[in-house]
Length: 454
Figure 1 (spheres, rainbow, N blue to C red):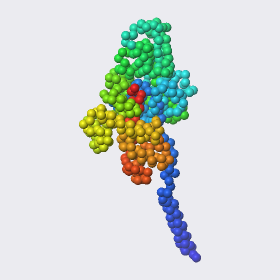
Figure 2: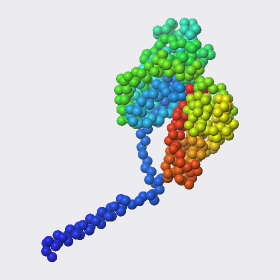
Figure 3: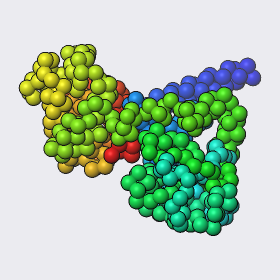
Figure 4: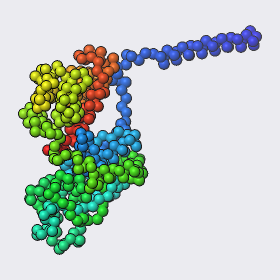
């Protein structure tokens, strides 16, 4: 066989081998994988969520016209936008718990004011200052002349900043009494009740609270400026650098200056108007809300948050799909509770409260107690059937169906054919994302109410 024929033979063999390889690779890479169970295909992925614990502070977290706002709360939301990482905010009202949390490295950011000088840098990592403030005396207006002796000055929980009374008359007569179990609002209530005569808090808190304590006044400063800082997680060096860089840059912006005017000014509109005439009020219907909720066994602030979400307390509102009234219940539901569009607002509230109680009874033995109101709010929006479907799907996929975080994922998935056609689903297709957003807004407001409304 000559060389030319050998070349042809080599080319033919090579072509055959190449075709075999191509066909084999195509078979491997295009094999169907539908036989692989979904739960086996799940891959754990690192969350980019920033975990934050925020101490309840009068200027930092409150509800205004149905929305949660506040100085540090708004700063954290701005941080979320700039770092492109969602922020999960936990609110804590107990100072002792907050202090231990600040030392625990449990969160990425802990927002809590205390004298950090003795803990830096061995125990905690502090951020760039978010603001500066100073301690001031709080007293009844008629006692502004400091006639009461001795001068016992009460400080709230974990208020360890250095106080200086040298600018006051008879400085040695001023005695500091720490009250680890009281917040500043507790001390102000005690001032109004004449249980104590003097208290001290930082200026930012004072200007926030004064509109609600007209019998009290802000006295002189009793200490130097001190920084308000965040406590950062010791293990997050790269993240901490990003947070500090953002703080340094943000404080130079007009947005930051507007934020300070909005919350830290004695002339702040949102502070003075945030609770109307009473800082514990949510609406003109609070009396009937409290009465109905108390009788039916749930927190009145839940129904208040739901009403705000549904109607903003507008009694004659007509909604999409025929819902009407202050509770915005559908006609079929209203009929079962004896309500029509001509029923009084009080009767509508009672009907809504009974429906909420009914929903509580459906879910109370099925879900985690701490998450019950999340399920109830979801069912109020979507109807209980779709929530029960999501619970069934959650159980089928071996997730914890007592937690709203897990169940809400399957509620969203009910808009996909492979889920709403599942055998465990009884109510069919549902676009659950709207309800999940609804629950988030209702419960954010409710959690704000639990801290700001007695």
